[in-house]
Image 1 (tube, protein in one colour):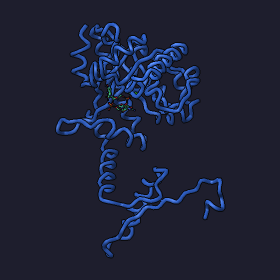
Image 2 (cartoon, protein in one colour):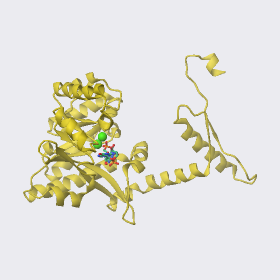
Image 3 (tube, helix red, strand yellow):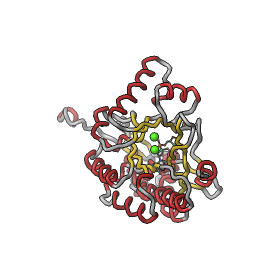
Image 4 (tube, protein in one colour):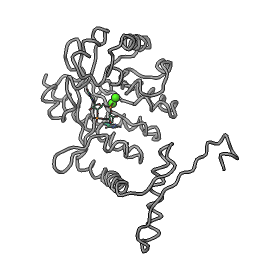
Length: 315
Ligand code: C2E
Ligand code: CA
Ligand code: CA
């Protein structure tokens, strides 16, 4: 009816349903359940309704538990920075690393980012996780510096949520100064899609950070909808080409495409690193195309900080 009256409005009706099996069930709770499942349904563009179920209730419970316990997890040191080395495919030496978060469970197993990062992005608490990981990285880099170890650049992921916090750059600068680490060893990884929303603000942050000497990596390049034009404008030093680019490169067209993309990025004067490299065949192909840097399981999975230091920070 509303669609007929307002054909250009793209209106849609979404409903949340809770079946009352027991007539004495508290009506306020029933409505509350229906509202929660309705909010969930609204996120899916194609879903006209959703029904409250045990699975939904359990999932919601898990979500609330994660959201409710993240701050104590940070305080208790349960959020750990794992490190994945980055390699030169020419020399087979480590040229850097990426810090990736893991949440340690009481039994010593770990929750992976997929289980908590998206939820924390929704509520904004990701900001605290990002800074927690960043501080662990700074702390360990300060130790390397003090003991005269060879410094390698380390990249840290920062969520698009930081765009909503005007003190983002100041916080980064203050923490770096606290640990006495030179900004040139720090890479700020921002996912490509973060440049979609409020791109001006993101660019302003990036410019300010670069002026201070930090490097900026654009993460997951090729997964968003940005055009290659954007590469010329964004204040970015390193482009991380998403895993999906090299997952299949067996057709001639795809091979040429990967080759040309690299030329374009180099023309825009950015460095390139390939992520998710899993096989020696991929290394061979990428080196034949003239690429140098890569990260992926073929070299190493992300590993605990202590193991990373033992394996790679010895000189
Ligand atoms: P990402 O930044 O694109 O990180 C790369 C992901 O690919 C990591 O997954 C890594 O373990 C995985 N990976 C690396 N090499 C390979 C490979 O050869 N094959 C395959 N199949 N996978 C590979 P992880 O650690 O599960 O992280 C997933 C995503 O979670 C990250 O993707 C990043 O977007 C996010 N994330 C992780 N830690 C943080 C953090 O501290 N802050 C923020 N904001 N996001 C984080
Ligand atoms: Ca990343
Ligand atoms: Ca990535």
